Length: 469
Image 1 (tube, rainbow, N blue to C red):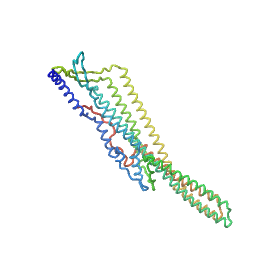
Image 2 (cartoon, helix red, strand yellow):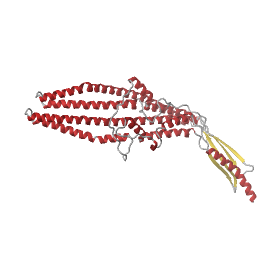
Image 3 (tube, helix red, strand yellow):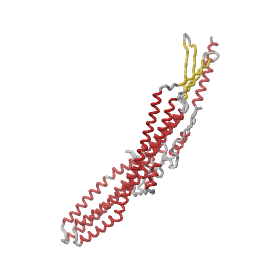
């Protein structure tokens, strides 16, 4: 009896050891990456060299009051949580390519025939093989999806840069407003002294003194309001930099840089159509839809399964090969899958065309805004402000000589103040329009942006069929 048990144990041992060896070999198996997957991983590594996966490993510039605009931009692009979220969405989509081009996991099977006793014990192994071309088509869909995610990441980076620039120039606008209003307060104090002197010699009444004081009181309140608006503007700058509530406020810049755009109108529009990330995202959606159509057409191809079972109780060991094939017989289902993919492509193409129209319109409007602001700025700087200063000096001399009243003197002062404030507002608007043109429309990334070089190919290459071994 013991010898019979030993014989049965040996019968179990050989197939079990063989099956275990097969599982161990397959556990270390890797697939062959497709061409698109290799390109996507290279792109991810290139960007990852700048945008490290761990925030502590990113080289953030130390911000001080003397930091340049470039330092503020680099800090924002590397520290903004929305950029980080878009980056990891892209990284996840790259990993999905490997998942989609891989074979399904193999299965261990077990079968036994039992009557009064166990008649057969048959462990086995089963592998499903998708139909020819299905893995390649699925990998192409995932690759196209990863391209779309990259352009979403690029859009997030450029939007962050624009938000930073807008907050940066609004702070500059505040500081310039404060500077002009304080200078005007000093001027009003001088005018009050002139009015007092004129009143002392009986040339004017105290009404002129009171008018000067009223102007000063109003302007003092305006300065206080402007000072109070600094905190929300600092909060905007802090948010653009990606700093959380419990982190310290960023140091406001003590000097400001202009960012001229050295491109002609035609060149800039051509650059926009070549590099605008929103357009690139729409184009990637079209390629994704095309890949989905190819995958849907593969749904009419059957899948196959192969397996092998071994009867451990038989002497000699009996092997039972197994094979299976799916039957894609539901033609209406297949047709609906293809029609769905085709409709998705038509929608993506329509969105691309719509976005191209919107980019053209936005470019035309922003270009007009830039030209209008530039003309108005030239008028203010070259003519209106110099003439307003001369008018104020003439009015001051005329008031001292008794030729004009104090009301006309204040009117000349108000005119100069108004032109100076308009000039600062125009300069601020022009900088924001330039930032919008270069970042949001033309897609020109700032220096140090964690993006692929413009010349890098971002189109999905044709994928090669992966195999497992």
